[in-house]
Structure formats: C-alpha cells, structure tokens
Amino acid sequence: MTNSNLKPPLVTFALFTYNQEDYVREAIAGAFAQTYQPLEIVLSDDCSTDETYEIMKEMAEKYTGPHKVAIRQNSVNAGTLRHVQQAVEASSGELIVIAAGDDVSRPNRVARLYETWSQCDSWAVFSDFAEIDDQGKITAYHKQNDCIAAPGYRLRSYMNGPVNERSIVHGATSAYDRSLFQFLELSDDAYILSEDGALSLLLHILNKDVSYIREPLVEYRVHDRSLTNSKIGRNSWSDLVDAETKIAKHALSQSHRCSFILEANRRFSKGDEKRVDEHKVFQDYKRQQLLASWWDIRPSQRLKGIIKHKVMFEKWALPRILPMKIFLSFKYVSEIFRRY
Image 1 (tube, rainbow, N blue to C red):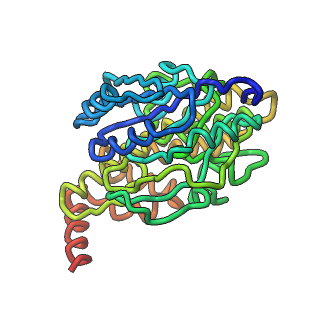
Image 2 (cartoon, rainbow, N blue to C red):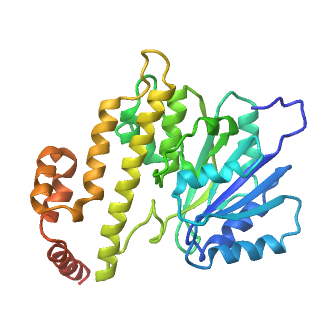
C-alpha cells in the first residue's frame, strides 16, 4: 500500500512463460499495452524447450514504448512458485502483478489493480476474468473463480479461522504486495506448479487481507497444453500416456505445496493459534505422494493406498490397479467407442 498523495510508485508486471510459443506474443502485447506508469515489465521464462524465449527476446528488443523491459530465463525448470520467487528477486516494484504467458491482460489491468491496492491494507488483489479458447475467442465471463471460491474447495478446508470468497486468490488475475515475498521460504527440492494456492495459504497464515475487483481484467486461456487448466482431448495412445504423466507431475507439485504450507504454518503462526488445519494438510500430503508414485509401486501397494484413502481415490484408483499398459489399452478402446 502507498500514500495516494505521493507520486505513483514503480509497479512490476511479471510475465511468466513455459513452452507457450503459440500464445506468448499476445501475452507480451498485453503487457506492453498497459496504461499505468511507471511500470517495469519482467519477461521471465522457466527453461522452455520450444521457441518461447526467442519470441520474448525478439519482442523485447523491438519494444520502444514507455515501460522498462527486462528479460530473464531459468537454466532449469523450477516450477511456478519458485519461478515467481526468482522473478520477484530480479524486480524492483512495490506491487507485483502476475501474468501467464498464455493469457492476455487488458490495458487497464495494472492501473485498476494499483488503484485498489493503494486504497487499502491488502497484500493481494485479484479480479474477475473472461475465459478464452485456443483461438482467443471469449467463451465465458466469471464473476469470480467459481471453483476456488466454493466452500468445499480443498484449500479452503485447510484454513482455520474466518474465511470468505476472497480467501483463495486466483493466480492468473493476481497482484501481490512486495512485502509478502520476504516470507516466501522454499526448500531446495520444492517444485510447486500452482503458486496461487501456496500464496493464498501464506496470506492466511500471516492474517493479511485480500481485495477483489469485480471487473474482468484478464482474458484467461483454457487449452490442452496448459499445466494447470487444460481441457485434455485424450484421442491417441500418446495422449493417454501424457495424461498419466501430467497427473503424477501435478500430484508431486501438490505434495510439495502441502509441505510448504505445513512449514509456513510452523514458522509464522503466532502462539497457540494455528491458522491451518495441519492434520488435513498432512493427510493430503500423503495422498498426493501416493498419486505421484502410483505407476512406480506394486499393485499390492496401490490396493493398500485405495483402502487407506478410499474417499479420495476409489473412483480414480480402482481401474488403475491393473498394470499401466493394460489399463491404458482399455482406456484407449473406450475412447474409440466414445467417439464413434
């Protein structure tokens, strides 16, 4: 937060990419079109294996507008939360606006986020969004992230104390007070894909307010190649194998997020007041570890896991007691019948 009578402070627009060559030009154009000044744009790539970083360099070199532009790339893929941490360390803004390399920020986005943040004590601000498809066509408007705002959403069940629809920040539309990141401590092996869940729990543990803007400021893309919001079309054998790999990778990320939450709760909760239900988080940690290692363990171990965690895993896991190739063969044939 800043004094509204003073000159507007430097804000950082941090755009994060990973293998988004088909969409990154639109995302960068949205960053360059922001009306707020003074603005620092950090284009940060998480070790893409396609042409994403080359496109970023090309556009940064050609830019002649009013904003300061910096570009960086990780030497190894770090996962979203660590990537955010690294980009923040390379930036200078008092407010950090988060953007994904496949989404499009509307020109007034930073100005509206800053306006709200500067008038309150919140350490995070997020907004409504318009959902777009692979071609950039708007398919829906969301007054808030309907899934994460639901009372039964897992992250909300972790939280002790007062909780409301703003308690879980929607990462694609978010901005954070720089002060938050001094509390972001990650273990060396932490690989966390969904940074918004981890930062939402950190905000809750620190008892910091979150503000919400009822206006769509981001065009949020849903497509098959996204790590966190894809609508997967499993039409081939390789698609089915990739889907199982993606499930395991996401589960590993979720288990690391649970570890982060437990450690943050231990470090920053005050006195006997625990802002997080540690039992629920730990149980979820064990479940996610099981999911991440599913195809690496024996069928008997999978069966024990189903019995122990049947509420969460029964429907998903029972067919997967079979060897992977047999399970995927059944899946492949069922996909063919479903299409025809």
